[in-house]
Every structure is written in structure tokens, then in C-alpha cells.
Image (cartoon, rainbow over all chains, first blue to last red):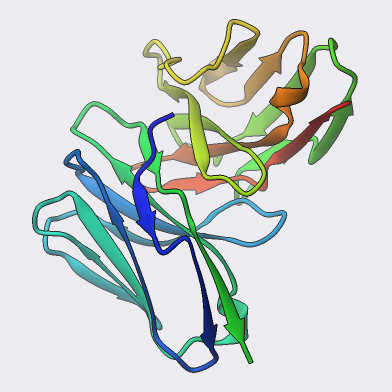
Length: 112
Length: 111
């Protein structure tokens, strides 16, 4: 099925470092969502973005909806061990089409 | 309940058998999705229900897969004559506005 390009695929970082990941698409999206998935669990919603250029924070997380509406990034500041997991972006297209297209995921490992 | 509930959490079945997976969405959510996640992979869209509209079945991989949503609430995903390649985690999500919330998934193993 259709998926967004998400990068990096995986990253190992030291505790306390900042993390950045992004998603790009050839299609325009109206909504971008960022999820985190822990092993054996379903994805948990972190941040939702609704307008081009929007910058939204949730604690140590910051995400932006790209101006072109074809990309989004997620930053995690001062990473901690519990940030370990897989992060997915998801885009929802034009009004009336409510299918979410998911990115391929970024696997984050934090070294204490 | 407070969140999306899926059952069973794990299902092991023999190749060729039929299976039914259940999803109880968040109360009041009008939209319901099914996704499939193979090991180490992203989420693959299967089917989408919105109110009384005809479902979007464009992601169902074969005619062995079908889904129903009764009374606009509970949904059942049925896989007939299961194959080993059907082994995956099947995730359900419900949505009220623009944000979709997922259940914990059903891990299906076909042996």
C-alpha cells in the first residue's frame, strides 16, 4: 500500500541529545499526525497538525506542518530512555478522503 | 470504554481456517479504520467506515478479507481461509474529528 517517506529509518542517540525526524510526500495533505508505538502496543497519538506552517509543541516534542503541505518534521528535545520506540507520521489527504497514509517509521534507541 | 478495545489480543490459527477480529471503538466516534502491520513494518490501510456511508474497502488485499460495522459501533474483520502471509498485527482505530486513536491490536499468527 501507499506509504510516506520517513527518515531516518533508525537512530541511536545518547540520552540528553535532541532528535529530529521527518516525513515527505508527493501528495498534499490537510492533516499530519505523529504517533509513537511501543513494542506490543498500538500507536499512541503525540501531536496533530492542521494548517500549513503550523508549529505545535507537546512537552519536549515539537512538530511542524510544512509550508508546501507535503512534509512534516518531529523534534524531541533532551531525549530520555523512555523515548525509545518507533515513531510514525501519518497524513490525511483532501477533504472527503479520510484515509490516513502512514510513514515507514523511525526506530529510536536512546543510550543511557 | 475509555479507549479503542480489540479482541482477542493474540490469535493463533491453522492455515485454511477462518478468523474474526473484533474492534470496539471509542463511544461516539463515527469513523473506524482497520490497518495491518507486518513485523517491523509500517501500517497498511485495509478498510474505513464513516457513519452510514459505504465503506472504503480499497485496501483489502484479497476477497478473503471482509469487514462489517454493526449499528455504527462495533466492527468485525473476517479473514477466510487464512494463509501464512496473513500473519501480522491487525490494528483498529476510531476517529471523531481529525485525530485517530488506535487499539492495542490483535496479533494473528497463521501456522
